[in-house]
Structures are given as C-alpha cells and as structure tokens.
Length: 461
Image (tube, rainbow, N blue to C red; front, side, top):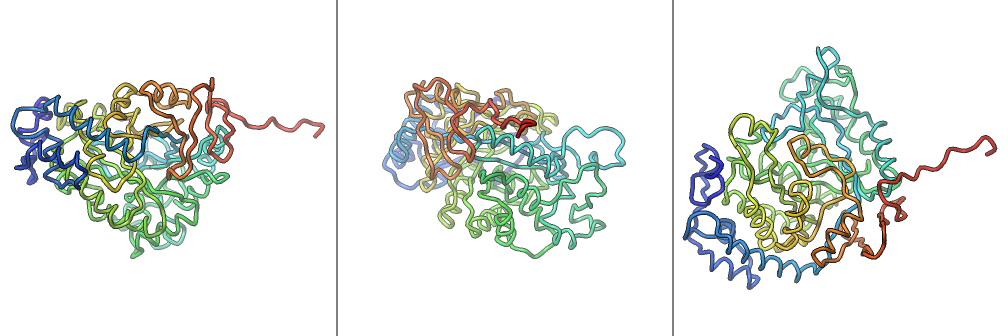
C-alpha cells in the first residue's frame, strides 16, 4: 500500500473512494510554462505540477527538479536571498482533548484528567501561573514570540461570562467545570494574559480553538478574537487546517470543524486586525487534487483578507498516530512529494510572500533542500516542541541562532532574525562566534541556552 501512496496514477491513498481524483487534462509542460511566465495558476495546473504530469508512471525526478528550479527563481524574485527565522518558544497549555483526530498523538482523552479517574494521565495541563513562569524564563532568554496551540480541554472557556452560559449537562457542548479536574486550566483570556510577558509576541488561538472558545453562544469569530486581542493575543496560527477538503477531513478528523468553519475563523481573526499564518498537513490519505484544492482555498482567503504572513506546508509524521496504528497509512510523503508541495506552494500562492520549511518535520538536510525549492523561512528556535515529537518526530526540539547561521550560510544564503509578522528583521553576522537573538523584549544577543535572570538581592541591598 505504501508504494501505491507515492504514485500519481493510482487510486487515492488508503481505501477511500474520494470524489476528487488527481487526474487532469492539463499537461505538465503547459503548467510549468505558466508558472515560469508568472501567470496565475489554477487547480488543474497545480495538479499537473504536483503529479509531474500524467504521461508516465510515478513522479518524474527530472520534472521535480524543473519545478523546484522555477520555484527557486520565483522565491529569489519575491524575497531575495534572505532566510528568516524567529526566536520563539512553544508553550502548549494542555493535551486534554476529546476531538479524536486520527493524525494526532499529542492529545490525551480529557476524562483521564478528572479527579476521580483511576490511574495517571499521560499528558499535562498547565495553570496560568505555570504558563507565566515558563514564558517569563523564555523571555529572559531572549525569545521574541510565544506559540501556544493546545488541546480542547472541556473546562477551557473564553472567559467567565462564557462559562456562565455553558451547561455541563449538555453533551453537545463538550463542557465540564474546572472543579471536575485535578488542574484548572483557567480561561483562554487568563492563559493569554499570563503569557503576555513584557510585550512578547503571542501567537495562539487557531480557528479550532476559537470555535471551542465560542461554543454554546451566538458570538462571531471577530467578537472572540477582539476579546482575545485585548487579553494579549498578537497573531493567529492557521493550523487545524489539515486538508481543506471535507471528504478528507471526514476520514482524518471527523470531530473537527469543517472547511467553511475554518475559513470563517480565519476571516474573523483578520476582521479583528490580527495577522495570521496558514498551513497544510499533507502526506496521509489525501491525493494531489486535494492538495491543489487546499492551496486554492488559501489563496482565495488571502485575496479576501490579506492577513496571511506565511504559508507552512507540514509533512505528516505518521509513526505513533492512530492513522498508522489502525493500518490506514504506513508512511508519509516522499522527499519528492515534499519538494513538489513546497515548490508548488511558492508558485501557486502568488499573494503570500513567505513559504516556510520545517527542520522539525524534515530534519536539517531535507529542510535545506526546501530552501532551494521555493521556501524562504526556516521556522523558529522552538525551545520546547511536543506535538511532532509525540507523533514520532526525530529531529529535535531546539535550534540555536548559531545553528541557523551555520545551516543558512552553508547554502550561500543570508541568515535573518525576524519578528512574527516579518516587519522587523536583523541580519545576523556570520563572523560572530556565538550569536543570540536581539529582537525580543529582553534579548541582548546572549545565546538562548543561557538564562539571564538577575541575581537575588543581597542582605545589604
């Protein structure tokens, strides 16, 4: 089955008779010519490029190189030779979640966190005070951004006014009061307020989380994001997108919001004045047409909002996930597929300036190849990474500024520390022996691994 996953002429991945198939009458040559000439691509063009055409079996490696070269030229024309990264921390609040996505090994069933549950919960829930301590330490170390994406804990609500509207006896709301649990996660407003330390940039509240934060009400997404912005939210991660085609979502995440709801959440964030990112998780049961349709929906969203600062292709890490455990998949995307997705993302998303490559997903060597296939951003320092690691990722949880300099200069590109929204940039001098970040609210160039908490006052002070 794994070999069938990786060719373009077979039935869709797995045993699913999807309506949308990757066949197209557009030729690879015509699609590539349009891309080379800067003509806006359509879905048929994207399918032709992602499959490297339908005039042969499997993916043609020479055509992968052709698409990559065109995408690399486009990257150079759009953003030049800078490769950006952000000094950041991941602080995920809780693994408690009842959604049950089959691609996820991060979540733990919420009932295992209840006080009367027999046994020990596998995961964690942090109080707002604990989140603040973690973030304060990271801000001391020089981070610019805190990213927080969490499970949908049943006790999580927007604020106390939201809690008053929720009935714990209504099974459709997935709500239980915090008194049921060993650890109270607080409200979203409380957690964001706790993590807003000294002006650090807070990147949080996906459309899925925002939907959880308004369940049982008639509040709009813009209302919710306005409230979250007042609490300290600075930008919104466009994760939980997976594949924005409902026939795929019905297989991999039937408990999640659908495509239209995700798009509505993103539009609400933009209406609240918040910049966003956008993602695509690929390499599981979807086919190339689904990927092309997803890219089209992201581009249309950007046409409407202009709020997306970067697009992040996420190659599925399958090892410890229910999809693999149930035999639905036995592998992820190939290197050729990864290169094509990154390259076609650059060529198709003509209104999104930045394309990210992930050393967490790919490892260093492959991630560098993506920087020569259309990508220009190299993620962040992370400091702590849990989601991919729990799914079986093996490429580490931390990246120093010195690592970035070495990796980026190895392909003759320019290392640049950036802000989350790309508005602030600092070129890092490759000659500096052990550089650290400088854009964060307490950053002074000290390497991230060295904390800089002041000494306690002496008895004479």
